[in-house]
Image (cartoon, rainbow, N blue to C red; front, side, top):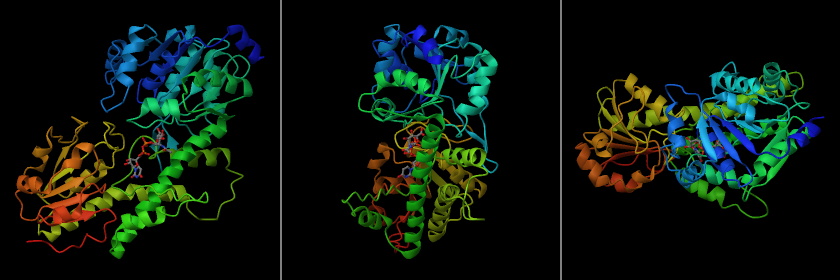
Length: 475
Ligand code: SAJ
């Protein structure tokens, strides 16, 4: 019986975390900070692109560049205390009681719903190869429903020769972190814990409970945990698509979506929530841009003969993805229209693109909506100069270190991320840097006051600002 094997092994003391990224690094540091956990290994492949993290982490330094309150201090503390170290030697997994995997699970092809599990499978094989009886394996990555009990279990059993649920415990405990608040999210969000059986759920609960301050463990089956995670991101994406569509409607009807949003949001009380999110220039990141497809694939694989759904109708969730993926194109059209009002052709126009990362105040550029937007401009012969206080370089993109350099001679200034550095942008200063009679300002995050720019002779365009987008030009 697995419970006997685990009882013989005793309480969890030594832990390993595979994948030193936005999820794995804070998770490992928090495990290492638990007094009754003896030691934590962070496992990182010593690859040309990310091997540098190993030495940094062993010095107690965080390789994450965005603002992460408390992470640097905690890493220094646990590294100096000798409770946390980073290695590329996966054979050390043999010494451990529990291993978690926080490895990226992008999609190869969204149309065919084909996920790219190559990195995750490599991690699972490394664990399987070094698995011993009584160990706990937890998948934290967001995965297609059915993966834990399916291919992950098979791979571990094949590599180890052991049997899940009999010789070792296996669970899915999806991460729920957002860049900029990694430690707080792990401590304060409730933790979904889904074992392949009751004993696995209990063992995983033993691992996560000590890290939680406000949050509590919510136990369920492994597949329910996979659906919970993919669905919560799918629903968020759907909420964003709903307000983005409303923003497009408001532009067409000549009204301000933010007035409407305030109105709808005022319906409170009686348990009524009208959780309105915010329209914008697009949805990026590693999560909302793909988790819908994990859910879609899950129902196709697990529920293929059971699903009762209106014939020929598209998935609401996939439609939401398409609406959110359309927003960078809409930003392109707003830019083109604004320049046309100034009589400036796109070909040869200088565009200052402010904010390359997908989220405000972060360095995370995964699936940034700014990229498809920039590509559309470049295809039309525009010259795009990109500034982001958190992103110094990006393959194939001309990043400039100072915002003034991007604004110099700009025909249009376009806001894609609402970094707090941009909150103090001044219309007069930008006008003089641009040197144009009627520069354009295209606001993808409702960051600027339209009137302050219109007064200075700018041509203003904003997502959802139908009330301003056809304003009279001030000469
Ligand atoms: N966005 C909008 N409007 C909004 C909110 C976000 O346009 O009202 C855009 C953002 O600009 C960004 C994208 O959507 O480009 C994603 O933003 P996000 O705030 O959802 O950030 P993520 O993707 O890092 O975080 C989500 C969160 N999921 C949910 O809240 C259900 C987080 O809790 C998850 O841990 C994370 O995905 C993940 O790792 O799965």
